[in-house]
Amino acid sequence: MKTKQQLLDLKEKVMDAKTTVDKLTGQETVFLKQIKDNFDCDDIESARRKSKAMIRKINNYNTQISESIEELEEKYNI
Image 1: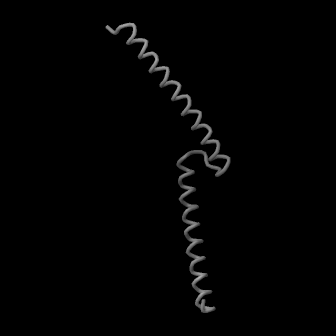
Image 2: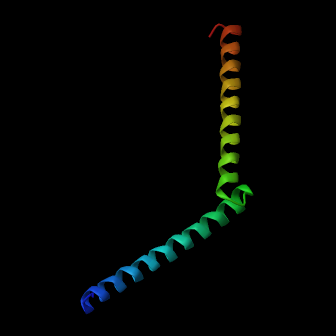
Image 3: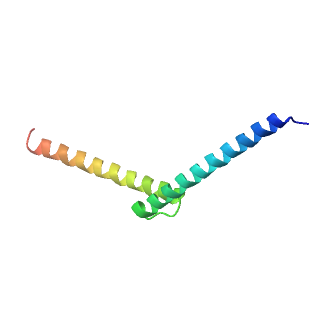
């Protein structure tokens, strides 16, 4: 049998855990609203897919820019 103090300690830990869960749930709600508003994504997985696609586009643009710079350097002997 647990003592009264042990039970009070457990109750406090449970209350702390509930508070933490509530905070994290609130943060998740805010984050999901942000990805919906900013990226038109309904969940984290769709945001992840969209960000990967955006990174691929950025990399392609960087490659195109680098190639264009090289062409200009060759053309104008820079």
